[in-house]
Image 1 (spheres, rainbow, N blue to C red):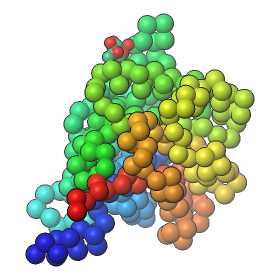
Image 2: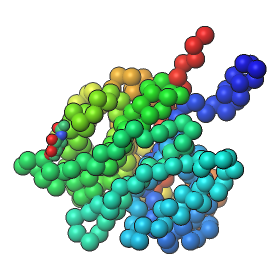
Image 3: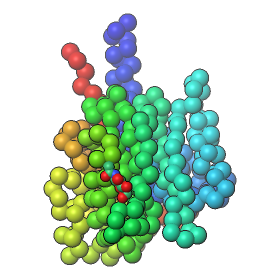
Length: 285
Ligand SMILES: *[C@@H]1O[C@H](CO)[C@@H](O)[C@H](O)[C@H]1NC(C)=O
């Protein structure tokens, strides 16, 4: 019996955690209603145990729940496979976006949610879309729990917002007694939006307690004519850093995977999902 369970677990390999981020450009009704686009999005999500979804533009608030019910229809268990949390619509004027996290309920649960208030004295409204921060519990992994600080910067203020994430980290680490942090998303951290000379002014980069897993050469853009490391993953906390192998960084090229033309791929998004894997908890022997 024990051997059988062990075999199942090792075959499934499902004890670690694949965590991805995906800017699904202008995600809304329009995309859920197109089967050929929906198929690619669903496949991108089911490859992961937890996904940060960005650029949700869904004024009626129906498209994202529809996506989740389509996702859960792929599974036959007694309970839905995936759960989600979603932010309010964030933005300075009429243009709004939402952040959401979709997660496999067997492996992950939400401990707490914190909408970063973005009201620091003398630095009010630093972000166009202030991070919607979530503390997750993941008992099957080496780290047991971790916080994700998500960000989608506007390209023209990428330098400022990436730098300000340092303040968000400080604020969250005082708010919660958490040790493990993942800062991820579409930083727009490449291709002219973050000139080389600016890196030294970005505290999230110059403070060496933050580990940038993704290099400046990584290409997360779908367009053939651009090779840009827009999307990034940054880790903080020694246990967190040890629990992620740098070689687990993966850009999921759905264009090649589904044999799409550039135009068809761009109809899904201008970004590929970016993934990392957190190690499974070491088995007691
Ligand atoms: C986080 O920032 C908000 C807004 O500036 C502030 O009101 C709050 O006290 C801060 N929390 C902590 C724990 O520093």
